Length: 82
Image (cartoon, rainbow, N blue to C red):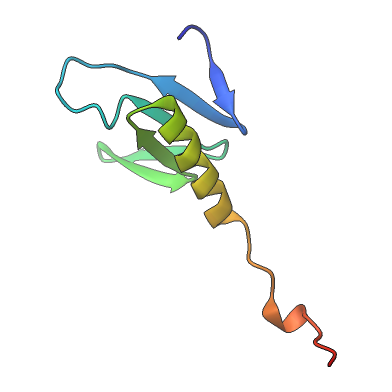
């Protein structure tokens, strides 16, 4: 993979390290992802990061993360007539 790649605004990265664990080869960070370093410890301030073994799995993880962030409709806003 060459150059920056995005999916639905998320930055996608492929890293195939020489370790036997493949579930982290693909990663993506949300557009609002932000970290801060406090006394040498990195703390996520905003956004999300997801990991997967394949690009297809990563796309599903991104879709799920976006769906989880989408506010649910307020049930009180529905008017039932009947």
